[in-house]
Length: 195
Image (cartoon, rainbow, N blue to C red; front, top):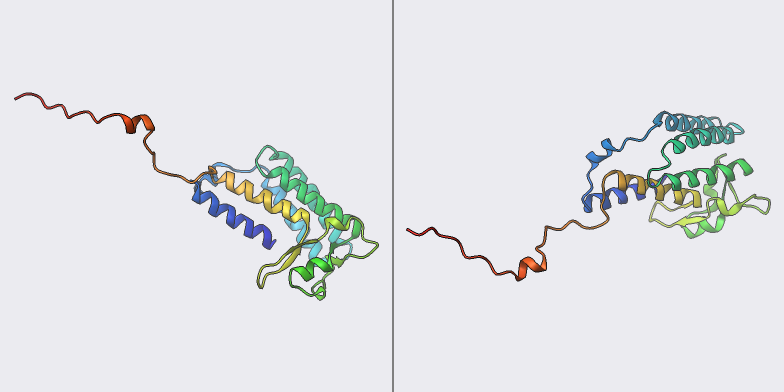
């Protein structure tokens, strides 16, 4: 989640630096936001109750997100969001929790003892598709974490969706510079009517 917020903040700054405006987000409304709300509720309930409620909540959440993503698939970044959400849901469904790499935790400056909740488990020899788990170290001072490839895709998709929604142009705005022809033409003398 921290990675997503960081990428979205950077995307917003990049959009503002290239002519985008926060007000343009109102003109780029997404459809089916109630599906996102249902997905968030499903994940929250699964996390609160734990046990089998966690993967069930994630699967229900994935279905809600699938409907939302289908309704908005033509928007830039939504395809990346879809791929990220489904890769996370798949690895959790196969393992019952998100696998976390001890090596990724170490590279992020964290001890393996941080995996203490029911939503995460350390990668073992019996882990299915461990490469989709939290295997990407994010070594931020005081905020280190390990994230999944799905999280990276979600962050990229959310950042792209925000950047385009704000109207970022991809180039730094400059004043209208004169063309070469305008510079090479001599200035016309002012026309004074005869007295």
